[in-house]
Image (cartoon, rainbow, N blue to C red; front, side, top):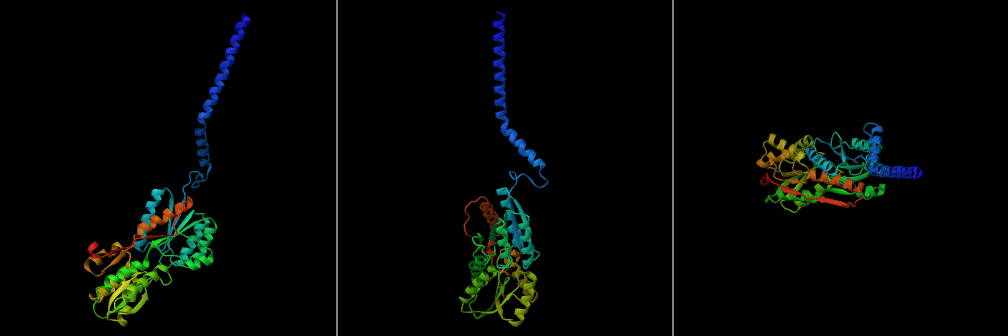
Length: 340
């Protein structure tokens, strides 16, 4: 009887041990995701400061612009920052000292490439000279998006930099609308001038062409001066002095951006000229007073913030292997004193 009782007790203890072992296995199985998370956290703790685990690391996108001395690019950065928040990426903003700082932009691209940035959104100061540096960056796996000023398609093709998404406005149409607005106010023979941006930059070329098209549609207008002021207010002031000394009867001036328009307006104010119609491009907040009092008759809103947002969005889509259109054109809007 004792042997039977001992056998039953032994069997019962064995069964309990097996059941406990089984429950322990179940506990370990249910805890495995938590253990995996701990493993990842431990890996993160072992990484050097500023070097998070690849699993947790956000994509790094660089916005490379011409300068922040032009309020247009300040607005562009605001849009890009909004995209940074919406898309949960890390945005790095780099600019040159001036809009003509092409070599500085090249150096920035090379530096970002060495830092293994994930993507570069470039608003190039020059349409051709940045292409070799951008081609090298893409060769190392960096995604490239072109905004604002178009990279020269033929130079890019020859360099092997094909398929770069482009986001901007129709600069030709915008300039045409701006110049046409003041051209339509002319009903007697009048001399006209065009203040250009950086020669060789695609957006400057397109704006010049658009303005000339509008002026030539009016038989009363004759274009007597075309000079560059490199997008700068101080250079535009000096250029205005030169062209008005040579052509004092100029009555219409198209400026390829608002900064240059402000330079021309400053010169005209000093000379007490109230008979000159000035058109701009960019819709900067700095020109609103000039619009309100008629010193600037018209400007073009090219929605800089939206360009910045869409540029970052396109870069993120490329990184996520989502299809991106070859070209995206943001609407331009004509702005006059009635819109202030």
